[in-house]
Image (cartoon, rainbow over all chains, first blue to last red; front, side, top):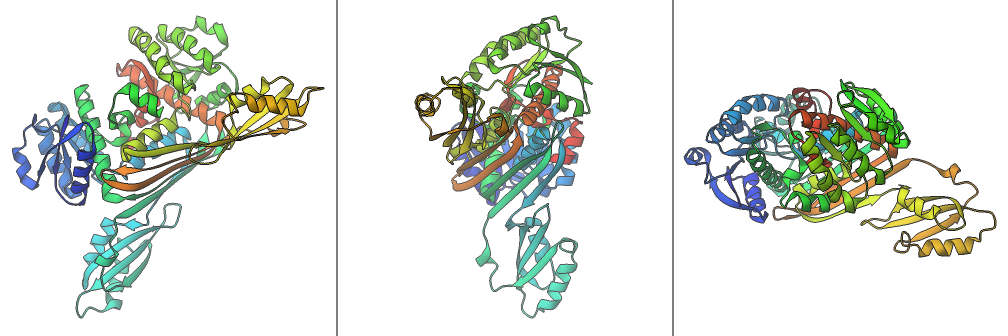
Length: 287
Length: 287
């Protein structure tokens, strides 16, 4: 059994716990909060799932890897993933362990689909359309506007990678809606997209962890144009993120066992390593 | 530059030639027919694409691998893939080379999607719906019926993995349609599916290499049900198959260079190995 522990117990941590318990080849090796993971010992834990806020991932990933413990995170700042990989690679090599970075659905499984579609039709355009679903980054940005008590920013796909922002806000007592709306629309998070601000009585009454993706590519295979591909999903967001992290925990352990040390993103993983069961079973069932 | 040669010059071989010429990191190292490939020399050829009829793949794969040349095939008899892999594995290990098996779209890229979706929602059902498009196996079976001069069997998806067969036939002079139809409907290839037989003046006038897939999964991530996924494509069949084989040629060479010898199916490949460019470029562009 693979011993998998969790660091951070929010939406993702709880979903990861459920996925560990549902996995036939894993056991839960503990749930840790912040710095109490400093007491972790390799041997008691094969893999630590880093379910912390994304900005804390680099620190804890390095701490765990330096103990020789595999890590899986869902670090989601696209522009900083290569930097994180560059930092983690030597730590993993030195400590003979494996870290899987940005293991969620985007970045993550969507990245694998984008890579696969590019291999199938090397020239062309891929558009990743998100939603409808809650954007964490935009929700935090909306909450930071003066006069906003609570907020929810929904991402609505308009096609070709263009998105509308539907921002639902509860106002603080005495705040003026028109002023808050103007400040929100001027914020750099919202200034470049079609954005609608709607005042509501209760943001909590709207909360829903549903999300979705519509990923399309039209491209060229060899000299043949108009090869068309589409990947859609409608999912519970934390449940999928937690599950993907747990599947990647299996891949991390297998890579470490084979002596493939280092920090990897999901496009660098073999799909079969994500699955329980042996090679023969999986090839017969899936190929 | 990766030196890629082609064995067999039918629809797939011609499409593969186009994909090799379009690849920034490859050069065409020759086009071979049947046994003239026995004169091939490793060094002049890094990878041989086996674009022969599928039943000839095992023979030529073993011959090429025994020379230390990487191979890629699109062997498509699902029930025999594990057996082919078991035969090729020791040949590749002994000769320190890599063979990629069943590199097409199904088996092939669809297999990678099925594996990925299973990792995202481990419990549930995946249905692969094919078409509309020509079934090679059913077309050959229809042509073998007495009184049939030429035939085309189209696969029509009805959902949940159930397919209709639309069989267009040209009759030989003097053949009786009703007799031919009855014999065809009784053939094991057609007896288990809804099948319609239609007499036409010219089968050639109907020919079209378009094909498609609608692959759906509804499953459970952790304890969360109703996670829904869908992969669709509408493609030129030989163009996609040739392109996938060429992308896999790149993966075979990289695996051999890393000392990862052996016979692999596509669910055992890293998506990034299918792509030209270096790791940093691909991670920044696709993750």
